[in-house]
Each structure stands twice: as C-alpha cells, then as structure tokens.
Length: 247
Image 1 (cartoon, rainbow, N blue to C red):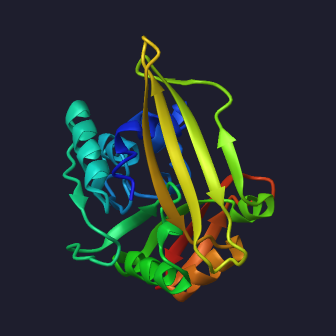
Image 2 (image 1 turned 90 degrees about the vertical axis):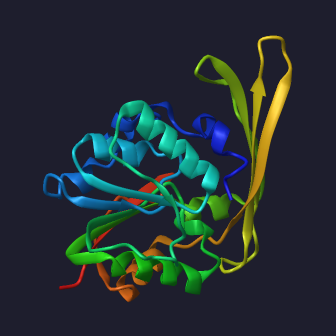
Image 3 (image 1 turned 120 degrees about the vertical axis):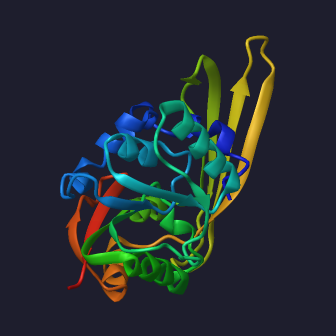
C-alpha cells in the first residue's frame, strides 16, 4: 500500500508537518523524554519527514517502511538535507534490527493497516520487542470512534491544496463496515491540476481495521509495554499514545 500515493502524499499532509523540522517538533512530547543521541526506530516512516527531522536533531535514527516508493522518497529527503539516514524496505514482522532502541515510533495512522486484532497485537509485540528496558513506544492514530460514528462518506476537499507551486484536490471515500473487526476501506485520490487545466489523478484503495482507544491501550499492555500518556479526547480527530517497556 501507498506506492501509488507516494509522489502525491504531500497533498494529504498538513502544511506544518511537511518539513523535517515541523514533523520532529510535533513529536516533542516523545523526544523530550529521550537522551541526546538516543537510538530511534521509525517503523512506518512514509515519506520521511519525521525520520529526517530527528536525524538532523542529532538522534541515531533507523527508518523503515513496507512501501518501496515511500522508502525511495525518504532516501531523497535525507539526501536533500544531508541527514545520516539509510531507510530500508521492511515490514513490522520482519524485525532483524541489531540492538535495542530507546524509542520506537509508529506514527501517521500506520497501525490501522494491520489486518485485524491479532495482527495488530503481533505488530505491537514486534515493536516492543526491539525496545531496551524502559524504552518508549509512541503510536499515533485517527479517532476511529468518530470515523465509525459518522459512517460511510464521500469527502471532496473544500479548496485546492498548493504544494511546490502545484495545485491538487483531495478526495476520500470511506466504506465503514458494520462491525469493528471487519475490514473497512478508504479510497484516497489526489487530482493534480496543471496550469493549462489538465488533471492527473493518483488513487489508491487502502484497507483498514480500526480500533477503539481502549482497545489500543489493552493491546499495548499485552505487547509488554505500559501505557504512559494519551492525548485521546472524544472530539479529537487524532491522538498520540506513549507506552514504556516493562522492566
């Protein structure tokens, strides 16, 4: 997933999070708890702004993603900024990292793509398993309670989004299943509008298995980490949860 959206992903991201510095600053609640130079795994790095931003801030960062196209974009971003970072194509299940991490990040709604509760708990166990004693796991998520309460929907952006002098229109089609444990779908499209009025559309169908915030906390405990902080609120669109490895 995300290979088709990799080149237009900037149109789906808030402007404040487009730069490495902005993305790193958004995770200050996590990084402020770490020692300078701490070893961090960004296990769903996407286009790379978080990983590159943290590397530029002096952290020892390992970046991975299951999408080859996303990893390619992360490599380009690291090269543009001179960041010491070598992203790799790797899934949660593959593991294989040498040594313990001080922190593991799973941000940007990545966890929802794990195919059901068992897969989600397996992914969290894999993340927790590479943490050193007392290491920190940080997960961000949409507020899926709000998404499900709204039901299936078709959303067209209210205005064109400008990125690098190019205009794009975002379109989201939500297919909400009847039960939490069933597969949900999100069809994402970005239509780029050229100066001459021609339109080029990039689209991808994403599979989702959403979860309640209480379920996420229970899954974290089952993975061997203790939930520590949460920004969840019933009216929030997204939230961040941190958890610390036992021992």
